[in-house]
Length: 132
Image 1 (cartoon, rainbow, N blue to C red):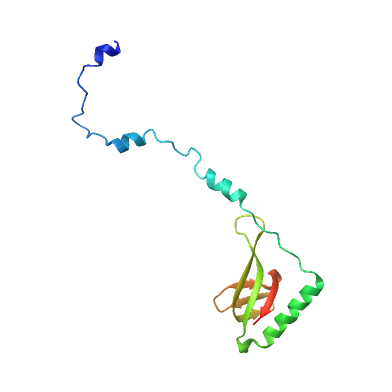
Image 2 (cartoon, rainbow, N blue to C red):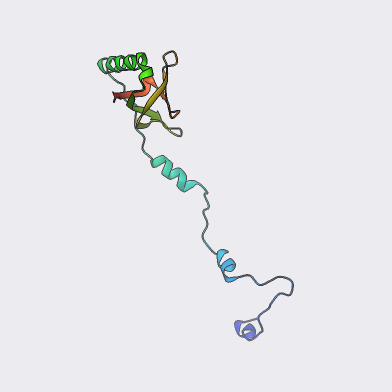
């Protein structure tokens, strides 16, 4: 059988199945992602994180003095500005975050600070503290 033999034959139309739309027919030949999530994994790998800075003894001591002062005057509800290291949940490292707010509670045993907006900050992650 050659092409010339079938060129003039009528086009077959099924009596059982409805005709597929052009859009659905074209979708059969569309490219697809063989590795689902691969592109996201590449982007995640390329995302940069910071390393945690270790403060020297003098900076740590100054920070402890400020925390003691805030702790002893907690009822005054003074606004503070804290820059701290927040660990990344998916990979090593993290980012430095600066927040402003009011301290609700300080846990010296667990070394945590709780702000009124429910932000929890570990004292050991703080690199800068400003009382406003």
